[in-house]
Length: 497
Image (cartoon, rainbow, N blue to C red; front, side, top):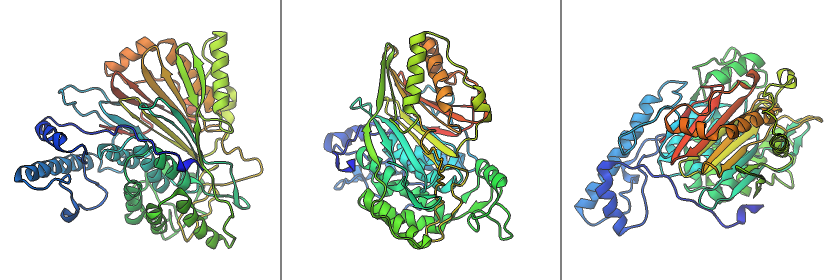
């Protein structure tokens, strides 16, 4: 496993407030470390555990630390106030330090977009706490494992694509070959896969990322509309009591669900020093529930250089085989070589295909670092086997499973416009065709699109809705701003700073 490679950390995001400029300059002269400006909103704040930036000795420095804490609490409470509803908002742009602001989806520091408002909000708070896009993305993915069990979870298979703006490198994350735990049930890979990504590129401590998801599982989360629709369509067989009323009927939107067994697993994972131990703990509990032996070889996720396609406008990066990334690059190379118009994003096969259940999210910062994550249960609620000892729904496997054909995240380093564009889709195995259409449209009119982005218009220009079957998330860094949007428009909540 490549988790032993040297840890790579790029510059973290820090909030800036004019009223704190003098205090920050004084602190920078005496100490190089930086402190959180927003405390953890997922648990009560204990004054005995708060740090004054490690500063002691003078009243002036104590007052400065208290001011930092007061500003942080104010920001956190204001954000929680705006996010009090079950669905949350689609996001907004706060005024910048210079006093100007942009339209929805454009931010000065960083942003995250995901299928669940709660998880986008959690990712935003990790950014505000000094985390980078990997911290925000992994934390949000763990959150989705709690609140969207129909589409992802600790039993899901993950793929990812990360571009590090500091080093200029693009790295692909894979869960490794699919393995069977028992017939029809796949070996879970989420914990070691996400742990490996964070161990190499994250900044915040690993336990910090699990605080929010653990609290949601233990204290309860509100069922949102996507989960309620999935429950109504599938029924609750195998899912009670987790997602059922006492009479066995499915929970509806706005109902509260808890998963204390999953909370216990996440708590143990927070204490595990390595990705091996994080995965082994879950495997032992699952083997006990299933009455089988613990596998001799657990999941082996990897980090490897992304597959790339150089072209006149820049370089395209995606995930290697057996994902759909190579198929995506082949489509793009053929289209660019022929000079033909971009292909129809909704071919006939898209309109009739049955898609596996998958989930995506994307994070970006204004320096151009991008993380795209996609996960799959291979069916709504996966195998529908709810492990009683862990609260985990395991992925489904069949003889004809194509568990990675849906994964094709794409990053474009656009040399002509000096920006970074990231695309990731879910909902259909033929998403590569829709992504090809989108990237070719972007390359056809880069200057016009860049001008729209900087003027505050929603980006990208609205494209067809991927035949009403899929979701396409787009993030970009342009002119020192982070941009987020989705197709269809408004499908996925975003947050930023």
